[in-house]
Length: 318
Image (tube, rainbow, N blue to C red; front, side, top):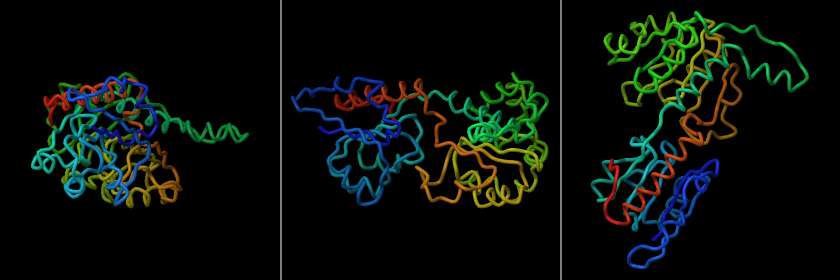
């Protein structure tokens, strides 16, 4: 039996669980685990995955759709980190009788990164650090977080965590999303505002929404035009929520002060992508959940799920 572990970008999968624990199955068949550190697509991906019985995914990385599944004759099970993965066609897998399992997903790491990006933009830390490394000195005038207005798009688990970080720093926190209620805002202790008010009055806006058709390009030309010229935008959620063409145009014309993003339409982001040269855009390489603590949960529970599938008793089914 062959197991594929995909998209181990920082080569940490072997550090957080004992893959040798799989050994052999009850029928005496050796269980081989191959861990891949790159992301590929198309025919090359099909050829790579054809020998495998179980494929283990890192969420939101390699897409697994119906067309790919139909070209994998040995595929019996798919395991993803987290219980949601927009890159996995769950319905297609179920109709093909493929076992599906997930893992728990601590969310605080992404909220921590979002707040870190807010703080970095407020004080222009990256630019200041680059200046020092290049022999320079002060280059920008920073601003306080205390008293600034933090607007949060989406007040779920991660949005709530960010709201608490902002409040701890003395920020005035407000929130909006299409289904958000005043009662939910009162529960978290933030101000409920309408969409236009959030964009027009927030000094910092952070996105914490689940991707769906109704939020695709939710932040576009009109929303960016509403923002203050000294405001900042942060996205650690999903890339398509922002119209990136509109954002890069707004940054180049200085309609907003800056943005920080951790998620991209194509990942890893190609070295030639024009985003890399965009002024006032702070980019991180999709590291929202990439922490030691989160990876320990992901990989240790992936190993548990493999053992359960081999036994024919899948756990944490999707």
